[in-house]
Length: 601
Image (cartoon, rainbow, N blue to C red; front, side, top):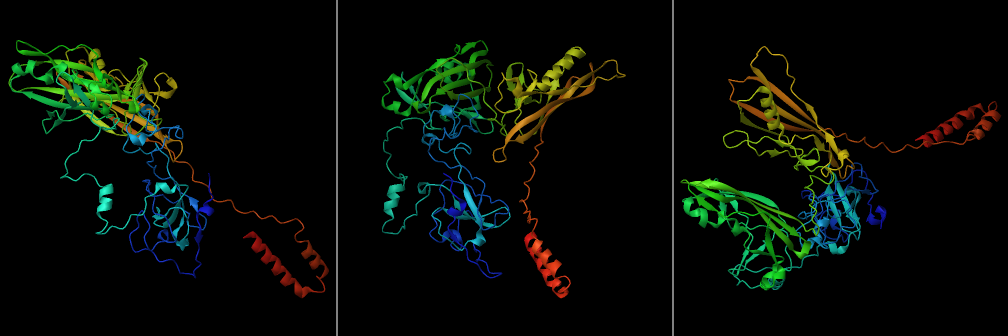
């Protein structure tokens, strides 16, 4: 229901003589009213507890009539907002519940605040304020919450919070003294450090970030799903790092072995069986009845993994990568868990080491066998820091840059280009003894990666099946000009990726989209027999070509129009008394000029 701004501000205007103004507050301007400011007089309610940001007054609002300000930051109310938010800007992962995105339908949550600790901006409603110049307010009798803010021009603005329930505001705290101190401390305080731990019933469902419970039936041991992480300069593995519910992440760490010959078959960290010989509890309350299998989810092995085997001087089938895929269904908990492995062979030698990677991915539970699409980089506009999407044929992937290994040579892995982030990387490529055409082809592939990007997504949620949502990458290869060296080969050594982008849509909710992209190659001439390695460089630059809208025009000016016979009485007077009353013409003429001046101003 819309409420007139004039009805919201029930204020008294004190008309002072020229130069008399309300006394300014001696305290620094802050988000709340001070005792000397109007916001604290006339029974003004306390400030909002919704976590809203300071409203910015529009220039020129210092007038008697209030002007609607800019919407503030969203509130964190535990309300089902899915029907009123058709566009969910924080839903970046299709088929997966995005953490703290209270409008994500994949979370299947009727009350998102029961699972999330807070709601991301844009996933809940925002509040509105009505502001006028603070110097116009003597005392406020408004029944709505009001505050005094400082606008961008340093002018204090008196603002009233529009259409908000009193339940959204903190109550006035009670006075605490020696006689009643223990009452609020007992009501609102937690357990003291020296208190004896009491057994509490487990929560009915997992919350975002909660550790995931596991059960090893062979030993009747209740434990947690671990995701080892590296610590220290060497990145040594620690086993005590728990995996958090709905937190998809990847960790890497290094294990060192004093005697790999003995650890090859005895160390559980190298054996794939130790990563799936247990069950996962669907919900935490399953720990109260560990014999009930309906609360337990077995781990499915995606592909067979062989056990470690010591063959001569080699430890075969050592686990180097563990990938957990966990499917969840809102407050119903974990529905399916699968695991896949990467294995490698280690040479038995003193001080042998192994680098392991642990990946945990969460996605929404699907009853059908259809695979969900890849993660979005925005919905719809790109989000700064998200991956720049590329398309080759019908395959969607990412635009990448070179990545070097420890010795500076080019690695098989590559850096993903992040939208809005300018970057440069390089490495050294060791040349093979091949002809010039094959060498050129290899260096082109090394610079742009495999497969070669053909299109780039216009928006962060582009569908690979919709070609209109992608724009072709313009490519300018090296021009092979004539050279006096007969044994030279012109090869590309640098790739510069230029991306033109702009904001479109409403200024209150702009969406970033890519207008075009271009690959620029730079080449140099080398001799086949003398050069053994070449330094390669890749860069990416983002150019903002946003065009701001035209500023609003001024207020329409009044165009006064007089009746065609307005001067008829004056003409009659002039015609009749022109001869007899020549001395009275001047006053009548002056009167006419004064009337015209009043009407035209």
